[in-house]
Length: 231
Ligand code: ARG
Image (cartoon, rainbow, N blue to C red; front, side):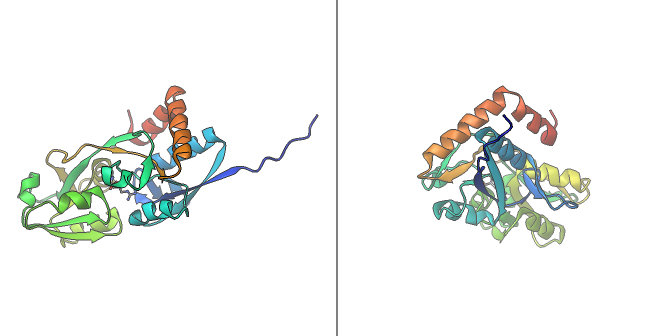
């Protein structure tokens, strides 16, 4: 019999600060949200039988958004930290990252984290990069709403360095052909990204974890990884 039950799709409202390529950003021509995180959360939604709706918002608004229940989940290259885990529940780690420094291509004086002392550093507001930069002695920290704005400030000569997530720095440098900036020094930190839900929503996070596990088993995670990062 051809009758089909019209089952209303579950909707997952997912917050993200979508200026963080290659994890989440807007395709220049289609204006759609694309990236590793976007593909991953869509695949997770599919596993869960839910429709994913991306809400672009400030990075520092994601945790308050989860706490206020205006979004169900956040995926945003967000590092799992102890501080944040007091407020939200995190999925199991889904991506290994860490912070590095970016300076202008022609800079020869900054080679290590130590060389940032007394310098001007641009970071994105509310990030682990901002936390790390604040530990540098006598440094002047300039906080921007997005990573691209921090990179622009470096290009304009307003700061000496940007402290930000390594894969995002690499993407930026590759995209600009290495003409504007370069990455220097060893990674400052090792960080794990996690998907976040409200602290009360342990059940939802359990479902997300289960979906990720499934995507790792069936090769879908690998496909998405290779699409954005190569092998
Ligand atoms: N991993 C860093 C953190 O969690 C930076 C994340 C920034 N993400 C973004 N979509 N702008 O603090």
